[in-house]
Amino acid sequence: DTTFTAKDGAVMAATLTIPSNASSKKMPAIVMVTGSGPQNRDEEYCEHKPFAVIADYLARNGIASLRYDDRGTGKSTGDFILSSTLTFKDDALSGIEFLRSIGCIGPVGVLGHSEGGTIAFIIGAEGKADFIISLAGMAISGKETMMRQNEQSLDKLNLSQADKTNSLKLIEIVFDEMASQTRNGVSTPLNIEDLAAKNNLSVPQMVVQSLKMSQTTRGPWVDTFVTLNPREFLGNVKCPVLAINGEKDKQVFPDNLNVVKEYIPQAETKLMPELNHLLQHAVTGEVSEYNEIRETISPEVLDAIQLFIKNHSK
Image 1 (cartoon, one colour):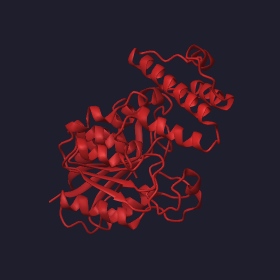
Image 2 (tube, one colour):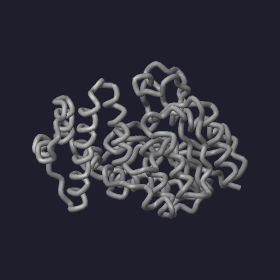
Image 3 (cartoon, one colour):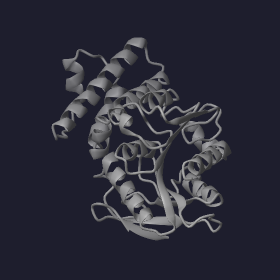
């Protein structure tokens, strides 16, 4: 267990894992970046600890790692609620600097899951990592991702086609208004009923209420996310890239890899059969199924990660 200091002075509580069987004094290492929401250093969810499993597997293969509690989570200080994807990117950069200060560490990369995968792309575009690994990291825009997720949720409500179409139109208008505010440095709760009336949209009350609730809990994270478009920086990534998506991912969809390949030609992209967003073998891939799965992370994913790091650390 150790700590490092973030750009704004927050103290990040972390675990540094150094393999006992390292074949050189300049072993490769990764910083692990969690997905969205406050998570501890193991990215613990549904009784699984995927980052702990990855750290253990890599250590057994001669690769060091640093994983840390998100700011304001676990033993880390700082304010999570007032943070955004870009804040979390700066935290990961501080982790890279910490690893580079350790004498036995050689090449340093970033491994991120979900939002952490997008952060890995940003760090790669800034030229701050020797290699990056994106596990289900978003390559399309935040708005597109949320629109697709909302469309999928509406499909489960048995709405009429008109109600679904109008709901999606209103959701898109809300996202566009939020993005416009954010670009102008403003964040004021939107009046959902007024937006529906102004655009002559008849929308089910449950959808209106959900959108109203989203405005009361709105903060820097969602404001940044709705304006985030990785296509604007993916082309600047020049380091080696491994991007993995599960074939049954219902949060960051499999065609995400097409965008990665389009903008980062040198990227190794792997679409893993039968895997969900958490990179577990799944039946449906739905979020509701996560709690039923005993596997923490697919062995094929672990193997692909360590082979990639070894191939790009010689």
